[in-house]
Image 1 (cartoon, helix red, strand yellow):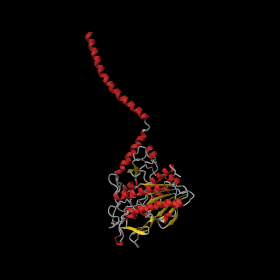
Image 2: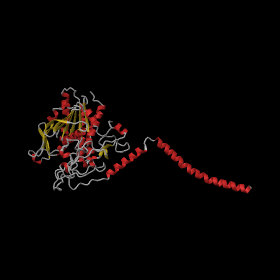
Image 3: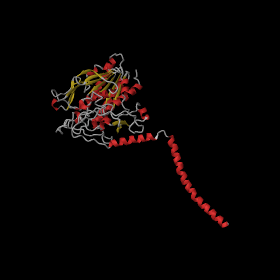
Image 4: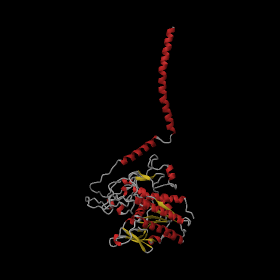
Length: 467
């Protein structure tokens, strides 16, 4: 009996040793599964939302590996279809979070630093919805075969740049007059803005002198947008095929084409720079200050930095002086924005068959600003600060910089290139093809400038002018 009991006890202990680990191994996974299900219950996202998030990320990744192949023979042009309205996925890393939206209007927002990121939402407009696109900037209709350049958004490093809201912009300019003053990039930007606003309200052309002095009226908001052609900002005579090969500029005289209307303008956007890089003769105080690349004129040779600075200073001082001296129904309030220099992307000399054939943006590490671009931007920023100091005690003035130099530098793919002409390769490849690597396709990267403009205006609305 004793030995039998001992045997049975030994057998029982052995069985217990076997069952206990098996039980623990079984309970541990069940416990972990229970904890996981409990945590899943607490999370705010459903499985459907998570699946949608993953789908969006995959879709963005697939875009970067896709490519377009030009067709052998050009089809009849059709307008690029607009994307259907949709609600962005909150998990898309290229789109703003609610915290980023809160930062959009903060003073610390630095639009200079950032990256271009994929954005499948695409442009607000196309050639069908907008009838004011300049022919030489209507790249898609002119046969450009790739459309990848339309699916990028500028993402500042320290803040968010929201998508353009046409209704908000129109509300901000209600009963106001906004003027773009300057060169063909000023014209490029206002034409982009007109297309974006036309998605909400149709503009009416009410005034035109020549091809580049125009005014549009928005009856829905009693608002006016004007373009004043003034590539030097100051008074001057443009070079021409029939006349001089150089420009003539009077650096101490504002161009009356725009200056005489200052008392009727609420916001001026200034754009200039490229015309100072070509041959010119510069006057100040009735005498020749110097000339640029005019060896046959026997003038003192100068660079373009001093004339460029003087022209901008004259412009900003004239706005202050004329606004102060002119009594208007709205007092002397005015907002002034100086857009910084927009680099070109010619691969080679612009006047010697230079091209711009890239089809995607540069990464920040790929392209750095050159010395000329840095210096022009520095001059523009310094002169705006000087104007701020001069107008500070007067009240009613706001001077700001729209810093687009870096974001423009990184977009070699956004220019018309050879597609400034209608199907330039329809009959084969000509020996010489003219390229435009200065202006921007519409729609295209220049739409971003107007997104920045809107955010600046929204910030001002939150911080009214000091009387």
